[in-house]
Image (tube, rainbow, N blue to C red):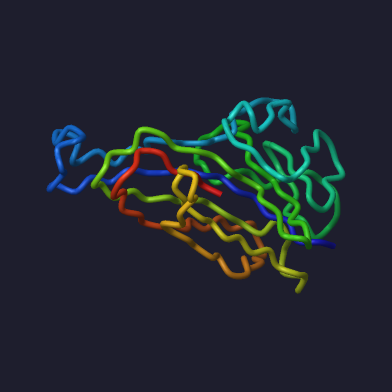
Length: 196
């Protein structure tokens, strides 16, 4: 059984008091995300939404029903009942999120890009936190474990790397356990960043 992984993505904003004035200094205590992807909600097990609905692209193919093969993903509101190694029926990490969809990616043995999106209108001179909630869909059966590398790059032609986070192997648990991973970046020059 190949490894599976679920992903929810947020970017949260943290201002320094010594703001360069390009953004309002009145916002120095604002900790609400400036960019948030939750993948929507609905009563159908699989969402008919596509990555374009959430302004991102992927090299993975979308599945709208089971099975979800290697290199495929789905937006689902509960882990489908496919086999005994999955955390069947488990929900996303958000409390009180009725029928909230999550991004379920069946990690391909050949590395792919499961998410690529752009965040615009960042304030120059400020720090930002990229965070993602991840979990391994498989229980403690000693199977191959997925790993993810998050990169924050400029959206300019040189595509400069400004931050990277490597999750390492995402562990298995007896119950599905979400972990928040975060990366801080300083925005020195431009207002647009690519996440992948």
